[in-house]
Image 1 (tube, rainbow, N blue to C red):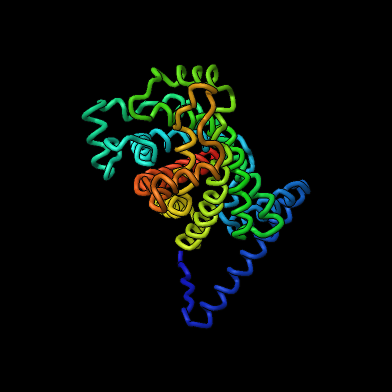
Image 2 (cartoon, rainbow, N blue to C red; image 1 turned 45 degrees about the horizontal axis):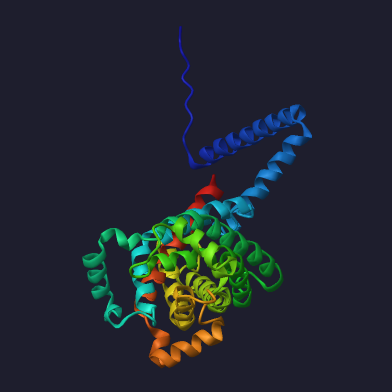
Length: 353
């Protein structure tokens, strides 16, 4: 049987004709398949596709870090509690040295010349454990105080942001002031007990013993003796602190991504700046909290912020207002760095989950 062999020349014209025919068949097949599929699809299918498309567009265009679902106040409370405990416990020995160096009414032999000499003297004469005297009451109350502190800050910041804009410095200052009022209502009594425990040769055996003695001998007002000074110190401090933190963070991280090192640097710089500007009020607060009472009336010899500032000036002059500024800076700058790092990390983790 003879086989007829059909040959076709592979000219460019024939190749183009075959390619066009293949494309035409492919388009027809896809159209037919799409038509058949659409007859079996429900209208909800197209609505779902539109929703997914809208979500992807919103996610891509949104600020990935700032638009996390962090309006839940429990996220702020949990993150703030963890940050507050870590901050206070990590820097507590330096805080004790700060209290000792700020005491303008301390005996001459206890007026330390530097932080290093203060550490050496305390460890040599009182032991290493004395560096943590009074920490249990701080450990117990720092968590709730900082939880309320950050929850209040985020709530006020959200309200001011809606009216003034997210990056408005005035909004950050108002938010910081609101957070300070909530925080100081809890921490002022704690500071009163803590600083009495931190005094040289404190007569109190424990934080609980100190609290009971203050309540019994001086009344509830002894816990809030420095509240006015605390407010005068912390409202300006937190206004500067939060405003500086938000501005520095925005400058160092214009894309506003989650970068832990940015939070550490921003928190440290903002905290150090705020601490330097409000040191005189901290000296006054320390004087009011650590002064002895008059034996006959059991009332403090110095009352109020104005009397405290006048007393400091008479006893130590202008330099007295900046006693202990170095340990205060060294305490607050790392503390705020640690606090912001842990707070932002927990907020990011909890919100992401």
